[in-house]
Image (cartoon, rainbow, N blue to C red; front, side, top):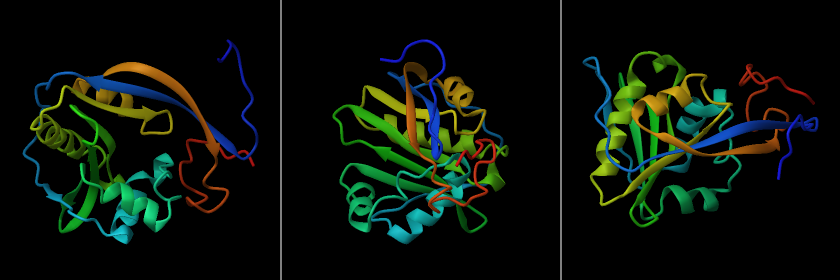
Length: 196
């Protein structure tokens, strides 16, 4: 149990406030502007491909959970029955990642969602979220949920709420700073200072 006030985060660690959000019915689609993207289902995703796209989409936000996994551990997740991986394609290149997990009965977790830096601000996120709505709610689910944190893009939490997700839980996550062990580039996430 946390008490009120400040708590020290040891050197070499980073701390984020994590917000869990959910929806229990399909919302109306987000406004789109005649986008030119396509969505490709990636059946049995190659580990190298996944790690590359995951890094290009998430390194700026310190996405590291999948980078720390062995090949066997990563394959067990992204190639599992009930997990669906999609790539947003733009100009012949994968520039967005959507991972949906249907392994719990009547729910879908939006595990990873994002676009590369070159597509931020273009409407690609709204387009990709509409595809996520179509894919998740086409299944017999009662709940669609996700979590985001203060490491994410500054507009992420507001975006998810505008999309129809409602917060239901908040946590503090403390982990090793992945920039200190080389998991992420030293210059990644400049909005989060390194304290070594």
